[in-house]
Image (tube, rainbow, N blue to C red; front, top):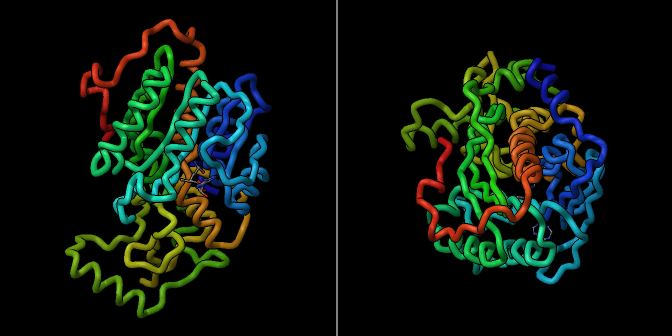
Length: 338
Ligand SMILES: C[S@@+](CC[C@H](N)C(=O)[O-])C[C@H]1O[C@@H](n2cnc3c(N)ncnc32)[C@H](O)[C@@H]1O
C-alpha cells in the first residue's frame, strides 16, 4: 500500500449515521455517498443496476434500494438530495441527444427536489453540459430556482482536491442561505502516489496488451500527433478515468508501460485508487461491472470536500437570504476551477 492509499483509508471512513439525512439518486456504487458518510451524514441510495447497488450496500452504512427511478417516485424525507443524473446524453463521447435521450435523469432529479424540498441539493454532471448543452442547463437551473432555491454552478477539477486524476465535472448546488465551494489545494497527487507500489509489476488478473493492440495504439498516436503516448506516468496525475477507457480495448484505454516495454491494462484496485476509493472498498459484480462502477463514480475525496461545504451551509440558518434569480447573477458566478 502507498502512503497515499493509507491516508485515503484514514480519511474516507463512513461515520455512524449522523443527524442529517442525505438521499443519493442514481447512486451507482456510492462514490458520492461515501464522501457524505465520511463527513458524518446518514445516506440512502437509489440505483437501478443490481451489482452497483450491492457494492453500495456492502461498503456504506446507508442502505441502497435497487430500483428504477421515475418521475412521481415516492421518496422518504431528507435534508439533502444529491445525485449524478445519467450523463451519456451530454458527454462529448455520446451522441449528444440531450433531453431527447430516454436516459436523461434530470426530470427525475427536479421532481425529487420538488417533492422532498431538501435544505440543500447537489448534482454532478459532465462539463459538456455547460457548453454544447448550455440551453438545457439553463432550463434545469430555471426550474430549480422556480422551486425556491439559490443555485450555484462550478466546474471543479478533482485533481485540486487530492484525487490523482484530471477530472473536470460540473457541480450544481441549490440552497436557501449561502454555499461556498471547497477551496482548491495547491499540491496535486500523482499516479505514482496512488499506485506506485504496483505500476511496474504485473498484479494478479492484469491483462497484457497484445502486440496487435500495441501496434494499433502506436499507429493511432502517430496519426493523431500525440507527443507522448497516453500511458500512465508516475510523476503526473492520470487522464480522466471512464468506464470506456477502463473496460474497453480502445486506443485511449488506460494502461501502464512496464520496465521491459510491454504494456498492460489497469486492475480494478488501481483504477479504484486513481478515483480515490480507499482499499477497504470492495466492488461487486464481474470485472466489467466493477470498471463501470468506478468509471461512473464521483471521486469520494472530491465528494468528501463537497460534503464538508454542504455541512457548513446546513449550519447556517435556512431562508435568511433571498433567493437569487440566476439571470441577476453576475456571469463570474459560473466559474471554472482550472
Ligand atoms: C453517473 S452514475 C452515478 C455515480 C454515483 N454518483 C457515484 O458517485 O458512484 C449514474 C447511475 O445512475 C443509474 N441510473 C440511470 N438511470 C436510473 C434510473 N432511472 N433509476 C435509478 N438509477 C438509474 C445508472 O445505473 C448509474 O449507475
